[in-house]
Image 1 (cartoon, rainbow, N blue to C red):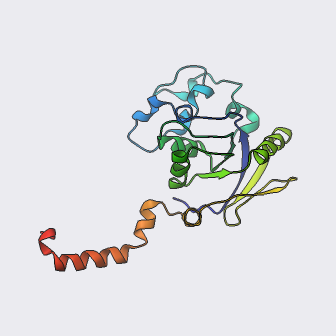
Image 2 (image 1 turned 90 degrees about the horizontal axis):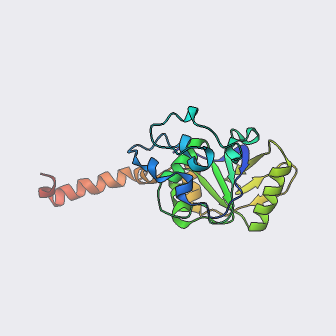
Amino acid sequence: MEPFRQHTGLVAPLDRANVDTDAIIPKQFLKSITRSGFGPNLFDEWRYMDHGEPGMDNSKRPLNPNFVLNQERYRGATILLARKNFGCGSSREHAPWALQQFGFKAIIAPSFADIFFNNCFKNGLLPIVLTEMEVDHLFNVVSATPGLKINVDIERQVIEVPGAETYEFQIDESRKQSLLNGWDEIGLTMRHTDKIRAYEATRAQREPWLFC
C-alpha cells in the first residue's frame, strides 16, 4: 500500500442509504482471479443503461446520464459522500477494490457495514464516519458548490471544507499508523522479519527433523 497522510479531492454525492456490495460491484464481475480491472464496472447497473458482463468494451456502452458519477460536474471525483449503512450485503473484498480502482481515496458516511469497513482499511481506502447531521450538511455544501474539493488529513483526523467548518473524525490508532506508513497486513508482518528469522533458526536447532 502507498502511504496515505492527506488528500484533497473533488467530492461526489451518492444520495442513497443501504448501498450494498452487489450494487458497488455486481456478482458477475467476481469471476476475475486478479485484483485489478474492477474500476470500469463500479456501480455497473447504475452507471450503464445495458446489462454488463466481464470482457465487454465499456467505452461503447450507453451511460445513464442521471447517475451522479456520469455527470460532468463530478468527473474525476476522488471522495465519495454517501448515506448510512454503506457497503452492506455480502462480504466481497472486490467492493473496495472497485471503488479504489475507480479513483476514490476516501468515503464519508454516517455508518458502514462492518466487513466492508474493515476491508477498506486492508486496501488503503479510508472510510470516514461522521454524524448524520454532519453528512447532511456536507450534502448541502456539495450541492451548492460546483467543483467543491475538500481536504482529508489523517494525521490530524480532520476534514477541511473551504468556506465551511472543519469536521473531526475518529480512527483506530493502529489503522491510522498503517495508513500513514502504507502498511498492509503483509507489511505489518514483515516489520518483524528479524524476529521471525531468529525464531526459525532457534526452532531448526531444537527440532531439526521439521526442516528435512
